Length: 278
Image: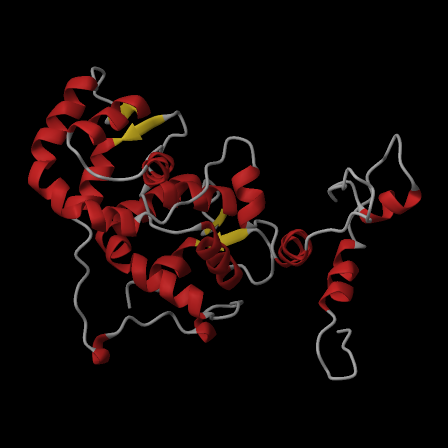
């Protein structure tokens, strides 16, 4: 790593190393200097100083893109793929209100759900939020809409929403001697780094996974047509979304780093579930 005389990291030099490894894109106009910087670098219109790339942008485009083929940025930008959402704080805030009116809320949803698909339109959901005075912001509504659009069809899965708010938010209280144990690394052929973000994510989703691991495993197997015990990252993500698992894109990235250290883009779903069932 490039460091100065005091031993401090020259982060601009480091980032330029990664940005220089990007595949060049053909340019119709512009100088060779612009070609070396890459087409994604913004230009400053006044021309008073050269355009430079943002360190955060280079870090995401360089470091994470080379560390794992499925990153939060690429996953959310892929066509037809909705990002994972951690809506637990929102659902916790809604819990008391939903518990007091969930029967009426469910009845209204069923009346709007003529085809009995377990879904209503986003506009109908927003109208119900206002009618029942659930007191959540537009941003929080949007997060819930993305999370509960389980079939990627623009509809809101109201049954899953009510179930999460009413039934699954009471995590079991455990003492220090009863903490959840993550599967030991030596039991897996290849395991990645056990980061604090990885552990905190697994601990938070433990109650939901324990509640639904049997049907979830059947769904994993349905996607695993070859019976290999492995799923692609895309299919693994689909199942987590289908069961409304509260994971952010960053936490999903840490889970991938642990269960797919070799960057094979394959996840052992049995290893993933086993961590919650010891």
